[in-house]
Length: 424
Image (cartoon, rainbow, N blue to C red; front, side, top):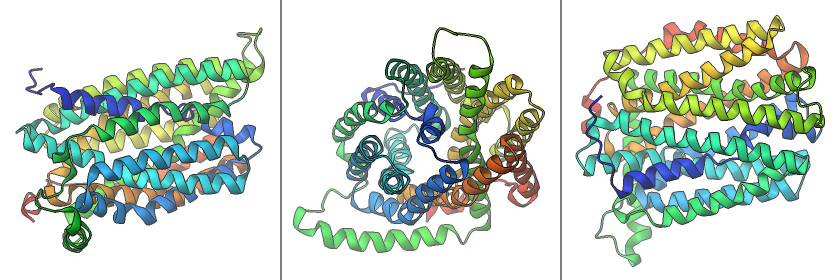
């Protein structure tokens, strides 16, 4: 494959951002952490719902502020909010305080989601590389997954050393401090601001720009094709986000039941197995992300790639639920890994497809709009999946989610991307 991607200093900054951003040591153990704190799956689902609702309320305003006031500032605030939430999770245990931490975490998500993608797309437009956006974003996402792979091993070592999942939140502060410093080093051209705005005029001109951006953002949703594309992407991502962490209790049950590493206590045995599986999972996901450009070129038009990956993913989620329902846990783990790989193969393709339909001026707002739809769906799905996991089992919960995706596909099937919207 001959890709004319310019691997300059900013390319490596984008990649390093992805690597640091995914050093979330809590990700491979988040369900196990909450279970260790005595929460039910329903309570965990409601915490996820609180996070998503808070993100939803902030998503569009923060995306608009990022476009109108400065994307670097939005990213700096995002990392600061993340760090504060990690400290609350570590120092202040309890369901109510975890809900507060989820809201603070949501602030970080809202300011970050869509904003950094818009910075990448702006840079590609400035350097005449926009035609390589799927491959370029795939490369940066692959670095994110490599960061997640390294993170899973570090997290496993931390749990193995401490004997508790709680330490992972305190450790997550360190890479996010580095990420904050990285954002400060980004060039000012990626802010999306006009250079003639002076410090004394920032508030007034930013307010005017916010209103203008809001009007363009509302216009996005008047196009049925764009709306269908956003819901296609958001619904698939929402189901993935609602079910992906249930791999952790499956691995926990396997680690406890199998006579391996018997010299270790239960939690430490779970930490070793979970760390190894997530390390392999994220490496496979990174490989998939880096090959997203191949998928876009091989399956034409791009709408076909979006639809095919949607259907395959729906079947995988449904099949994983069926395997767990029949107590086939090891094959279910394999299917979980396939779901992660497909998600990371699909995401760069859908981001590229969405970018064909939205103008550059509202790119952060448009991508944040897609994320807002996703957060609404996760807020609805996560408690339902948690309730089903508590009452009828994890297998039935996942199977129901996969079946739902298949049922709504005829409505969300996308067609050829309209290009007129890019001129708005």
